[in-house]
Image (tube, rainbow, N blue to C red; front, side, top):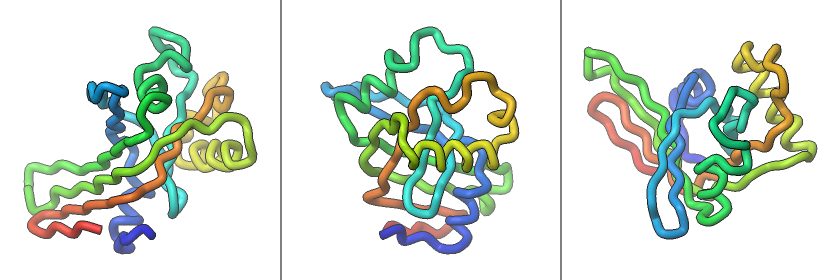
Length: 147
C-alpha cells in the first residue's frame, strides 16, 4: 500500500521529528512536533513521560483522535540550499494503542531509534498514536510524487 521509494523509506527511518496534525470533531486543527517510528507499514508516536501540563488522556491530540481519527504527519528537512529541501506527508487514520503486543514491539523500536527513551522513567506506560497511511505525498527539491 505504501508507494515509497527506498530513499523516502530511509528518510522516514532516519528523521528525528515530525509534525502531527489532528482536528477536533468541529474541525479545529492542532499541530504538535512528535518523535515517531516507522515500521514499514504504519507510523507510531508515543505519548511519553516528559512533563505535560495535563494528564496524557487529556492531551489535545488524544482528545482529537477520539473525536476524529483523521490525521496527517509531515516529516521534513530544511536547508538553505533549496535543492536539498524535502518532505514526506502522510495522511490517514489515527488511533490509540494501549497495552498489547504491538505496543510493546513499537516501544522497543522507539528505544532503538531514540536513546533517551532507554533511560526515561515511565516510558512505555502510556499509549501510542498509530497512523495507518492512506495517502502519501513526497517532495524533494524540484520533484513531487503523489501516491
